[in-house]
Length: 72
Image (cartoon, rainbow, N blue to C red):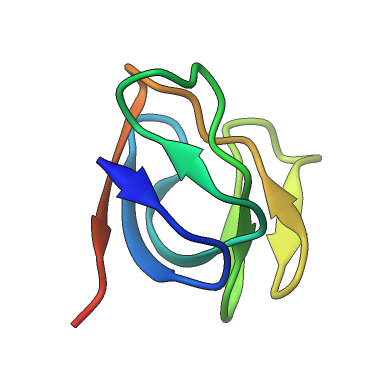
């Protein structure tokens, strides 16, 4: 699925859980290994107690470890 920059996404990640993201660049969920997504709102804690992301931070989102869908 092709995603355009600025699209709001629902992300389900096996490591960081469920969160709302925004595409920072165009990407393709079939062809690309890493997805350019920033956290759209709130905060997310990572697996490690050190890792924490806040709204606007780039989030690690890898094909195979997460799924994305366009938010409605």
